[in-house]
Image 1 (cartoon, rainbow, N blue to C red):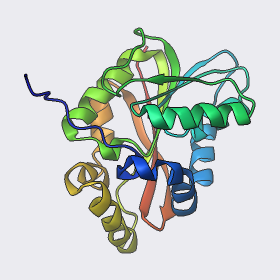
Image 2: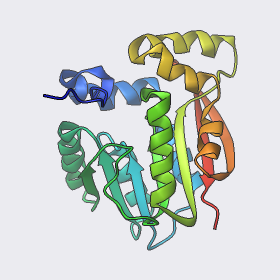
Image 3: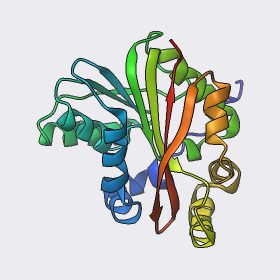
Image 4: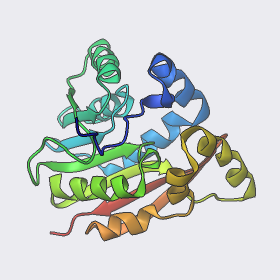
Length: 220
């Protein structure tokens, strides 16, 4: 039997048994509400827009987007069926309608130019550089001309303290893939995929390092 060339899927927090604790960990260590609400404000959602939350995890961002703009069509996609089940239950409990799909970031089941906004939080640092490139290209494909990408993830450290704190994330998630983030390579990544107006919008200091918010536009 031919061995798969695809990397082994790594769930949230590294292990499936930790998935139920994901919300508590992220909420208490990353200033989640602050940076995700800032990302939502940054995206400027409008009624009728089609929004994709890439690597939606337990659905927090997708649910907050729907609550912020109830007339948007919100879809979350993630590679972990277990975490998608948690997300679906959370959406039902919050009484919001969000579609959750199972797929990998570099092989999305959506047509070209389907979305007005693509959102992503705390995901790109998990990927190898090759899969970062493949994912950025997929996001460019599924966005409409003139549509926008908005990303929150670990970025270049604002100071020595933030760089030191980020070592914990690197120990947990791997030095090679996380080095791309802390080296400030995400802007170049999105530009290489074809995006324009790629900008780091703001940063947040957390107990694990600097959280950066980015935006980019698919040229019309």
